Image (cartoon, rainbow, N blue to C red; front, side):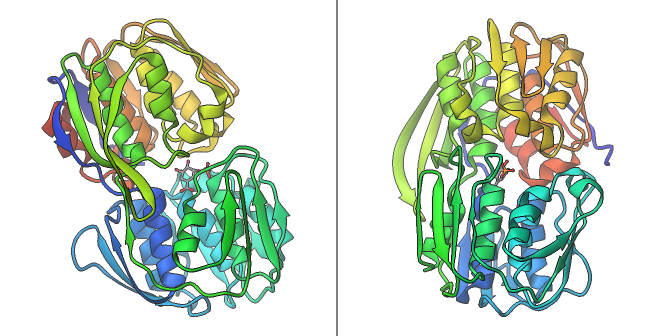
Length: 435
Ligand code: S3P
């Protein structure tokens, strides 16, 4: 763990127009699918984060030429579905659950053995959720203690399609199964209890793979080809989320976020904030690479607590740390339920947010699948992000309305998803000190 400590305190009203970096989910998939396609694909708006760079590096180590002609652009010389070769040693997925789980689906079908490792946080995260369905398809993957990384993926296995319903709402599980399904004999089908982000389905179709999908289901057969295609990555809604909450909380703010990806399976926070009283409007809707994008204009508004509708949870699963901050600054009580998945993210986000908010004087009760947060004032104090990028950025938002300075420990991992966060934030009104 790194000792990188930030401080965040009140700044000025947030104003101006900003563009947050490219979407993490789309960037991972764009590089993966381009690598497995036949021909050369260009990816524009690629997230220059540590997570997505680790995925690009993984494919480079398996023989894929990936060029970086300029920042946020990649040219990927695809090797075709069967053109990967064994990496010379373990593949490091860094902090990225998406990278490791999707790669497990691809590597389970290769002719060679692979080993996947991750950083301290990823090494604690459950992998049984992808190993189980992949094993049912014929794969052989062994994990460390308790189904955690490292993963040893045996090659040379013939896979067969399955019909699978993941036990938890997870686009990563769905995607791992569908990717293995590209190589499987027969049909692979995933049916979800709660629909999750559908980037894998949309992008497979864009790369020319026959796939049928709708809300909460997807079906494909093995044995086709992926054809190179250019991908334009929209700005990441999850990165925009910190600014949506920040500008809502700070009086006098009026901020525009340019061209944010508004895939409906990602924008649950918009609905939750609007239920709390936020003033966020969409301007200039268009489609970019098959995804809806729009500018989001956010003006200060007073928030009130809500019971977060449980059906919104999968659509805002990455946004709960900053929602907790919004709830702590709102009037009244906010209740979160049905969100046990938060306990197995980059950190246990329920416990870590509860500890941090309590250190700032907020009344918050943890439950197994959520929390009850009493809104009111946020005090000064020291909090720990436990190396979780979204927790660090969420407490930076809290600093904007706290009664004094908030010290935030262990912030280095912000670079996994949001390089340049501090400069962008300070440029529009935050007051973060980062060494
Ligand atoms: C992601 C899916 C979600 C999300 C993660 C990215 C993806 O994880 O939390 O940040 O790109 O598929 P789960 O599948 O574990 O819900």
